[in-house]
Length: 532
Image (cartoon, rainbow, N blue to C red; front, side, top):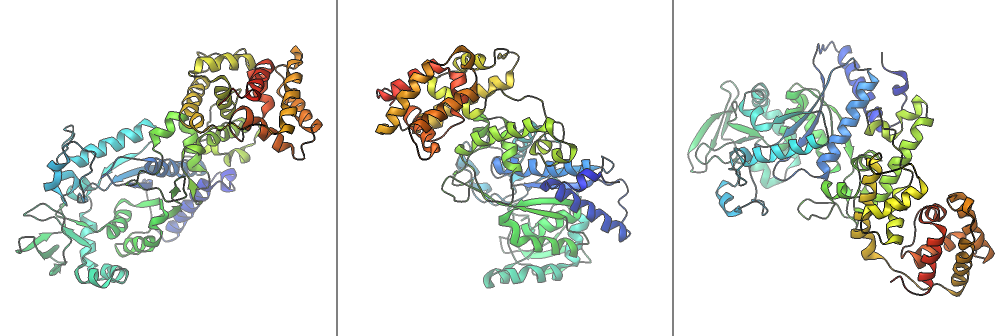
């Protein structure tokens, strides 16, 4: 019986898990028996380039759905995540970043697994990139099964489906031809033969197909007519038919893909059905945008890489970014990192106060598969960034002096996660905050209020020095006494004049950690023009 709590959970992975459960119910009603066959979740990977943040996003989101399904069915239904590499695709261009790129020019259009490895570590370029993919996924602890398209074709795993594609050649053409331009229609074939003479993947029309013999006939590059079996890796399918065939052959129950696939999804589904399969539950996610709101492109390099994000923040914050609103276009750039770090810990802090129903909708359930850690940092990441700024800290040891003032029991050895956060804050400040600081002169009203604040901070008694709420009230009172119409402008002025930025965390909390006397000195330096 499905878990009742998870059956009503509103988080999108549970919504998708319920769609998969509905798919299984439909199969039962149709008399389809799965036996011990697992529910298959799939992701695809193009190995012409390195794995990237989109690769991480697709696998981490798919894993979230799989975990939700396992929880929904109380682990009584076996599952499997397959990551398929399209490594039989022809190499369209030589990546400029590989060693001696000119040496690969003669291998253009050959399957990536038939191209020598320019790095000299694997049997082929495809094998090298597959190893990079697996190392990438393993570094995050994903539970998956790797599958090579080359192996699937050449081992015979795909043979029954390729023969079926040959039998239904006309049906597949009827799906594909209306989607093509006139010139492409004249030469299109769902089968791409591997040339016996050159080894290249050929985009050529078929002169004949023989379903009974299991062969195709075409003109090779040298002009000779060649007949090949469609089995044994002698051919591969065009990418759209291949997509649908893969669903049928691997029994895929769930796959998600980017919005750029959305228009083609009905094609994949129709071909899957033609081949006797049942199209999987599909989930379309929006593509990431760069800082200018333009679509991120691997070739343009206009986004942020996984290793870049992890230089400045923990992996959980990247998982949260992927979890939140996958169907909304989101800007993926460095300035989204601090917000995601703090929001992650806010969700984590809420966990202990929540019942099972609320927890199922908490992002940390999905980030940690229902078993989140208990660590909550005593200070926010935004606050750490402001401490780095105020103290001009060049290493995290300086930050620890302030952290221990606020949380005396904390230390780097016993709090490695907090120590990591301190290091992230220093690196992020040095690379992104410090270069963009812009201090401004205060207005007369602001100068008077800041001068008053200096005096009041110096007069704070010992009992209030670490009381962030009391200090926040004190600062609030100064703004009110100096008749700021909008007190948000008062706090904004503090940040712009004293820290060179327009926003930050609660200033009272900052003062409690940095110290009232030290904050007073910071303000005095700003009023004297010593900050720029």
